[in-house]
Image (cartoon, rainbow, N blue to C red; front, side, top):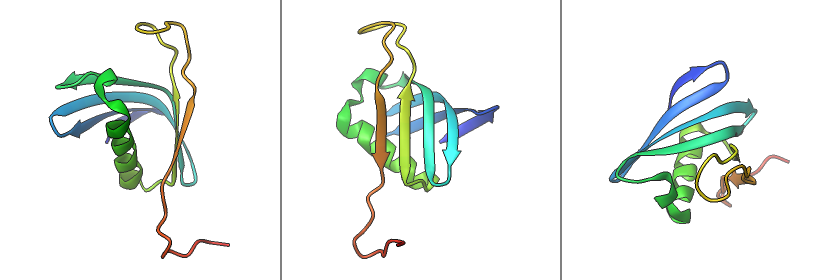
Length: 107
């Protein structure tokens, strides 16, 4: 997942079935919450970042949350420099991990 870490910036590689992505972001941790600011995603093998689609993106996020053992992942993208609507900052995305009903929650 996170290959390099320097001064609050994480660089990583995500490898899936027939594709590989590189990601970089400012990473902040708050208990069991991870916040990725200025997130950039680059397709490097077999896929472009725009080809992910909602299902595959959700699966990558779920797998990442499981691997890093966080309950919440917040993504704040960087300002677009190319493509649709250059200069636009994407909205904030919040993902939470589902808990099993059989697992008691803390009061």
